[in-house]
Length: 180
Length: 299
Image 1 (tube, one colour):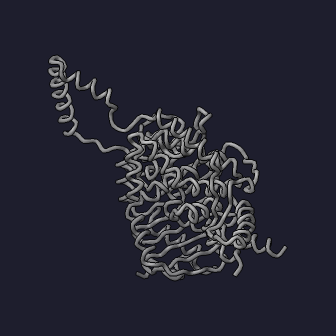
Image 2: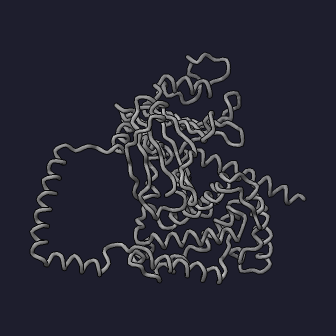
């Protein structure tokens, strides 16, 4: 967190290196969040682009009340919701993303994870947007239910409900896929 | 265990990395935006202008005169401090014992979410609609229990409430404003601007109220937040909010469009007790008989 505060302070002075470091630190996590929400790798990259350009444009004025990670995750989520609100979003598929990988270095494990992640991404996209957003923001964005509730303007219990329903549905969908 | 059973862990491990060309494109555009961005503090050239101005004798006298005028203005202003609308609403909410918040979609007539929060009874009841299914969740602090049911006729599930949950809930109850989204918008947005507006249409809809527009000042607000505004109608005397409307416009659109609205009411203890009994009490019982586990009256 101290590192982020230092980077923001540098960014206020227009330091390009600070902007690069922030980008490199958070880009993959933010892309994963955007792609998981949209099921569209190309659109997710556009979201990442818009969020960082907007972030850089307002660099001199940014005063963080939340931590930098939450700020950027909220920016991505808001941007995705904005796109969904404007039009019914067409999807292309996560196969077009740069790389989908797991933390495992084992090639056999990675292959299994690759297939599992594809199934998971497809299953996630079958959830209503609100449930998908809650699950992704909590598990990939590291946001607490209370923080998601504030961001979405709803009660924490609603967020917890969406998370629970969403996970139940995911399990059902994934178990169905495995039986096929 | 297959990965469907451990779906949370699998999602945590989901990872997509950017391509090198993507990084180059984004960083190039971000650097260009950074160059155009106004920096925090005054640029050197502007500092020099100020230094030159203060080296001038006439400007020095003018500056002293201006400071005296500002000093007088601030002195008289300090004699009659006027709390801001947000502060008055915040204080009013803090004093309110019970509150009911009903949220509607723009074209909705049935609320998609309702929260009843009682400081005196120390209970919070939430009614949500998910996939056309209505769920009621009651958190009863005195009895440290949470009860869930999908409808008044459904069976009731009970969960124990941890000390941490109790502490969080009590804190949100004390403030009450924690439940009111337009007062929380500055969690993400640094500054919002409250402005009194005269709108005969909204006043006719909710008589006896003062109307305010709450808009973000922060141009760097993330995503859609900077394109949103709240219209808040508060009781003209007590400043308790009665209605709040959320408007949003996309980047390309000029006009704000209604996204949803919230109705506030302030029920008394008995109304909340009856409501809880009707939902969590066994069918056929008289609403006068407190039957559900954790009735606040028992404490």
